[in-house]
Length: 434
Image (cartoon, rainbow, N blue to C red; front, side, top):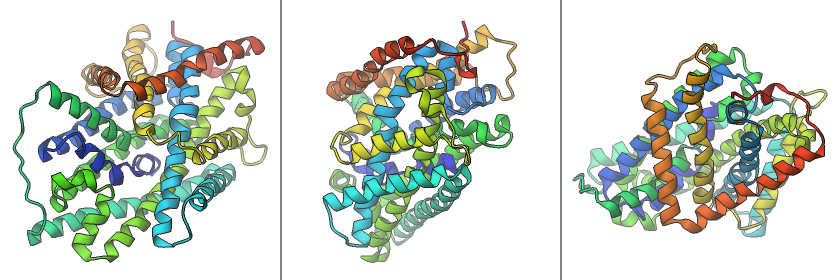
């Protein structure tokens, strides 16, 4: 539920028009969704091996620290806080407030931002009360959003049976340099929609039998989401002509309106609000665990590594996460977060998956309750694709790429300051493979 709930946010409802701005062939659009799912599976197989090896709260922060050392672990935690995680939370709660206003008119503009901020605070308070409360919220809204995707798929099948959908040309065009670059930009939005498959690893210490549960959660959740995404995208193409997709940001509403009439738009608006709300809860629940792990290892953020005396949750980490996300809600810095955050975090994903090969070579005898299927092909495919993806974004969207990596670089002087605050004590996350 956590993996599916974090993956299925607003990306599948909003990204179709963004992809169609760059890719106009239905066959290539579906190919992008399949490729994005397969690429994510390659990465997830490797993350599952690492999660079974190091079942500690903090997820890939722990893996980065163990494999490459404290410096890279610190940079990853910094990037998650100020580049990717809190910005994603801000986007999700903002869209929750926006789409809720289409169902229950309560005003716009600043009222929506205040509701979004209140959502962050409220969900944070729920998660401070204990991981079980956060999990209950997550399970409820994940069921609702999976039901929403199922409804869209049924609507697309109904339109196809009535032969009232769009006529599609499934011819595969030749892949030249310009087409490849367009596919690279389209992949940004696909990977943004698939983002979240690493989330189960962040709560490894708080689940039963983590060496078995975490790999199953990552792989099972991602495979289920991938199937749903491909089917939903096919239904979009059946309901809306490809030429109109760039001008149809809320394509899911268009599908439901075509199937059941005007009420379909209001229904989808309500479901998108639920989807964004549930995903916000998931990212708040897991994001604070990264800060908690960061606080246990680095003096500058030491207070974030403390647990609530009663609920045993990282209360200061949760409130810090909420404060940064709330600040972003009242700014416009998240307008292009799908591009700059995806390219920045992709560097760390690539390094983490490469770490599986590094550990296999340096520590061949280390216990591995789960071993990545398809090794070494799957990590090689993932790393090479991520490298090409990052290079393509640098070439096609240099401003957003520079913005993302610039924020990552700001963590370097902070690491130096943290090192000189005091000599940090040794924690379990600090051991480095050398």
